[in-house]
Image (tube, rainbow, N blue to C red; front, top):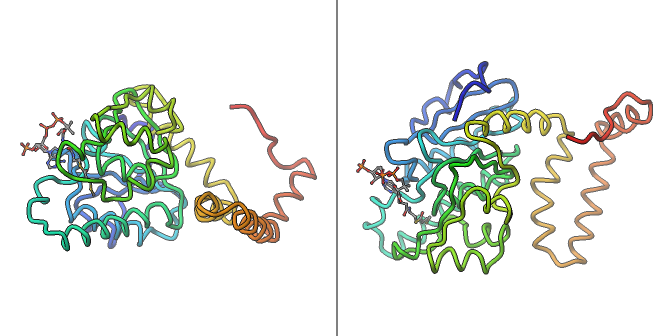
Length: 273
Ligand code: 1HE
């Protein structure tokens, strides 16, 4: 992936700079976080998942959007298979819960996360990508869930998040038969919202990040934290949650100012892109 889209990014300092399994840079409100284990295809070791958790719990106050990508030729090869053999059932349970905590911090953190995907997005790599809010695929991207062939099961929230994107039947097929979805088909079935040309993922992410940063913070909060909860609620509960969120959002000074600006002809109209 080309870096040309992000010339003004500079490395972060402080705690986040100590996370050696990640490479983290910031430009204004955009934090670019790369998985930095290319020699192992960004396979997720215990150390990497802990560092991801730390990073998302300690985002700089100034960050308004995170762009997540992978160094090297692949986004992520999933669980570090070199670490699995040590597991008994109790360790396996806590290992999975550690991943849940980390990926919950990605999905239910303070800021929207855009994943720029290329090469392999497999196993735990897909579980991580599914925790992001926006997924962009380049033509090299492919998705797989090889857990069945390794004698494993999903453990990073994938059995909860991936069926919500593409349905239980497709996930069942991927896991039973090893079916791999290439970028075009993955985009068509909803594994990614955007499909771009080779090397264009980061530029697309930066453009989307700019738009997201321009939203009212309370609206972004509602989109991240209320929308997925509403989807999991009964219709009656969902409608009530929606009413609460709508009332809170529209009663902020930010909303009042934005509505007045529109009515005075000072705000952008909805435009076709
Ligand atoms: C790894 C891993 C890994 C690569 N754990 N070390 N995930 C998988 O079953 C995917 C396994 N990986 C692959 O199928 C391939 O590596 C790829 C298709 C992703 C990339 O192929 P390639 O040809 O570019 O790389 P490579 O030569 O296979 O791997 C380069 C090195 O990375 C090599 O180590 P080296 O020391 O010999 O150089 C590989 O061993 C290493 N490597 N992938 C450990 N995954 C919470 S539950 C989640 C459950 C899962 O995620 S199951 C799916 C696991």
